[in-house]
Length: 209
Figure 1: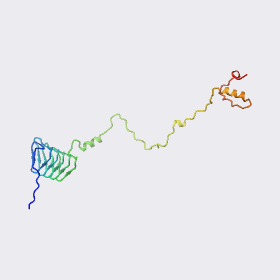
Figure 2: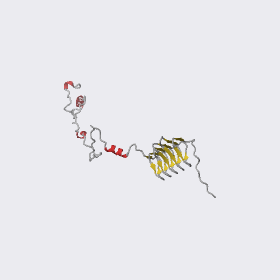
Figure 3: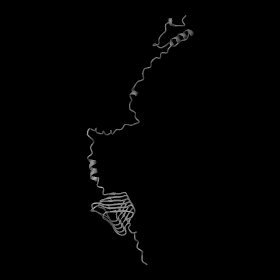
Figure 4: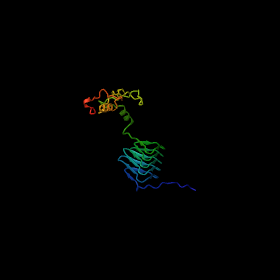
């Protein structure tokens, strides 16, 4: 009894787009929505058993973009420029590879970015090292090492302020009341008003006979 060999479905160009010099070997699986494009003087080669996920973009520029045997390209992955994916390598979904090579059997996690040279690490370090404050700006003073306890209140000007001296209270009509009480109770000692109070003359006393 012979074992039946597993064969991938034949390639169909009705559900993906091909432009330029593109070579697709037998047994390649390409999902719908895939874009395979080769610029002039460039070429795309997809070898046997490779699998291209849905929505992936393969764009060869300034050279050859090659997908090795049995390699898997995840959904919505983007491969641009001179790219070489080794045999049985796996590129995670939504990954971007620019002008880079991936070794055989390597695994690239989903959402990875490889080959971005727009901002190299040297440029980032140079920007940080060359930073200087703008001219005319005042230097920032560092806080003193001794910190004040927030629970300890400083002496307030209000605390040192002495209370105003007590002033004698003048009550309107106090003289009349005292004179009236003196006539009604001649033998009773009546509190005399303060020295600052206005004393009424006997001529002004309405109760004087």
